[in-house]
Length: 114
Length: 114
Figure 1 (cartoon, rainbow over the protein chains, first blue to last red):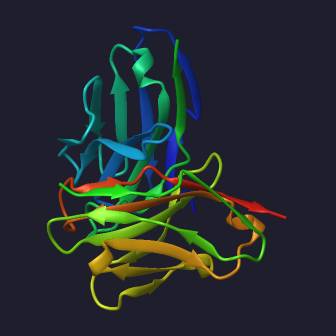
Figure 2: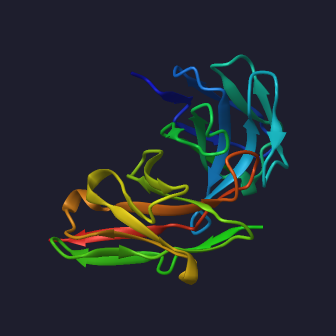
C-alpha cells in the first residue's frame, strides 16, 4: 500500500552540485507531477508527465529537468543547484480521467542549497 | 488565467468551534474547485472537490464546501473543530480536466486550541 514514494526525504547540497530526486508510484497512474512548495506561495508546478514518454513544462521549470523512465517512475534533476532552489519538493500522480488534478502525493523531499 | 486567494494565512479556533476557511477564485469559465489538507511533514490529501451539479460538496473528516458563483467563493467549513484538524489547507482551481491550468492558493494554517 505504498502509493507515491519519494527519495530522499532530506538533502543538503552546495551551490553548483547536481542531484536527482526520485519518485515512484505503484497505482498504475498515467499522469505524474513535480511541485515545489515555498512558504506563502502554495504549490507551483515544475513539470508534469501526462503519460509514459511525455513531459511538459509547468509554471517554474527553469533549472530543472525531468525524466519519465517508465509508467511508475518520474525523476527530477537539478543540474547545478542554486540557493533559490531551496524548497520542499512533492511528487504526485493522478487517476486516468483527472489528468490535471493531482490526487496522490508523496511525503516530500526537503532540499537545502547552501 | 485562473487564480485563487485564501483570506488569512493563519486561522485559530477553539476545539468544538466552527471552522471557516475562505477561498475566492477567478476564472473565465465555470471552474473546477478543490480543497486539500496537508498535515506536518506529509504530502497533500484531497478533501473534496466541486466539478458540476450540487453546489454543496461534502468531503472527508466532516468538512464541506459550498460553491457560490455570484460570490466567486468556495469556503470550507466544519461545524465542530477537533484537535486533529490542525493542518494547512489549500484551495485550488482548474478551468478544465486537462492541461496545466491547475492552480493552488497560498494556503491557510489552521490551529485548534484546547
